[in-house]
Length: 216
Image (cartoon, rainbow, N blue to C red; front, side, top):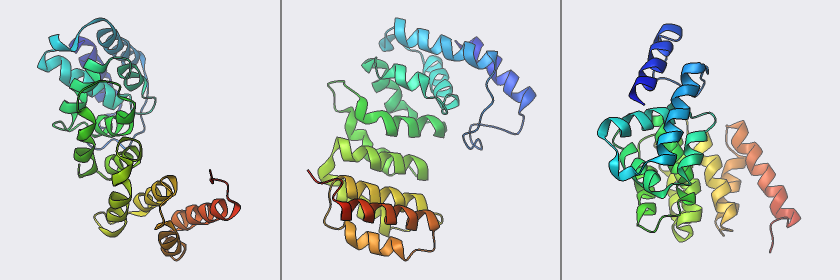
């Protein structure tokens, strides 16, 4: 596994020397080295127990997951293996692999293990990464819906990020999904925003509400 990861890193350094895990914005170029690395990681997840994982193996797998951020194939495989999902989910927050962290925040509702792993959603909600926190807010609706309204309002009002348009779009959709009585207030605020995509999402939700498309 480590050999495959290093082969990919060598290819990436030769072909895309300015792209790193820290500055990669999500775009990536695939190659044979990538597919070999991905296949090896899936083989390990499918055929070995997480209890036998070494620190190097954990780091390598989290690196592969981060590099697989466009297709999320490795993450989909993890959903079939609770032991690996739990182990890597707990460990990802202690790494710099931002593109792995948001995937765990997004996929956490699909975890089927019996332990208390889903409580880690609150760590994702306060991760310090805008996209991770946005994915975590969406996941909170499924994991702990009774807390979703409180966190949605907090996300809207906190002004934590200079560019918070997409955070606020997610807030609208979360409030809509849980049928919050506070949604009209935030739709009104969104309709007056300078952000065009926020206004557009508010207009679409207004139409859905007025048409009764989501009524039980």
